[in-house]
Amino acid sequence: MTKRQGMTVRRRSVLQAGGALFLGGCAEMVTRAPPPPAARAPVPPAAGATAPPAASAAGPATTTGEPALPPPQRSQRALQRDLAMAEAEVRAVAARIGGRLGLHAVDTENDNHISLDADARYATASTFKALLAAAVLARVEAGKLTLEQRIPISRADVQEHAPVIKARLGDKALSVRDLCAAIVEVSDNGAANVLLRQVDGPAGLTAFLRGIGDAVTRVDRFEPALNSNRPGDERDTTSPRAMVQSIRRVCLGDALQPASRKLLVDWMVNAQTGMRRIRAGLPDGWRAADKTGTGMRLAVNDVAIAWPPGGKPVVMAIYTSDSTLKLVDGEQAHAEVACNVACHVAPQRGSGSGGDPAGRLAGRESAKTERFRRRVRCRHGTLVAERCLRWPASDVSGFEGLATLVPTPARGLERGEGAGP
Image (cartoon, rainbow, N blue to C red):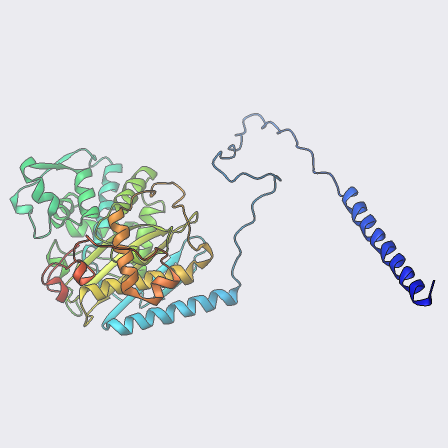
């Protein structure tokens, strides 16, 4: 054997010995790993105690028995960066449309929030109708009304925008339940006036708001006068922050009983007037309940509860006034601001399938709505298309108003010359 061959043999022997040691150590680590803890029998509750609720059968299945890891949390630095980016982008939207834009959005999971001109007064327009429905439900809880009680209606209750009152005028009366659905789902102005009389008028509704802790929002007139939105006129106004807080109290808090809260949220989920506003900017997989408002001098408003997949909701209110652009641009601004809120205030919950924990929202958005949202995606360009909405490009022919990209608003509303949903 040559000297070189001898060195090769010795090197091979050393490598084989090292490999054996390593494998032996790994085997020892495996064999010495502690066995999984034995399942313990449940301890029966003490006499008079209440047993804890059983685990939900619908919960995630695990094979190790270990709890699921919580979603990654942002550092304080990352949170501040995200909120600063969101505020900068919202300010850019406000500068582009001109006039005033107020925003307040709160993530109820951790109270992270973003605000812009959130304490300034804006005309409520029809956003007050969600609070009117809450006041009516409070009267039902107090035994002063019933949901099936029929309230007389007449031709005097017909307004320019009163689709339900016009269609049901021959019935001569509508139930409280139907009137509430009409004011929230299609923003019927005539039905709103009928219900305002049931809560002692605008002053009675304002008193209800003071009773739930809202010291800002005020209702002074009936429809359609409350939509005038005159400069410096504080009648029929609110602030984005006050509206978010009130909607949070009546829909998610304890201002109403659970059954009443469910009714109100269901009506807002079924609302048909906000598909071009906050809802249009939410990421795929989010679900929303909202109430819009449109008044003179281009008051374009929306207040919404938005559920990310499997998480607690974000409550937001967006109010605009005095824009030099058209109604369609104000609605586009709503969608862009909502997109920013979802991307920056609650980004860790992203997108996906699912909805609110109660499962009330599944399947409520029609194919027609989805087609419209695809068109909003194209109109909004990079911001919404790449960062939030995830619908693939597809043919949306057959949707009304395709030539203008957005359905044509009622004549006059484009310039703020009237009141709408």
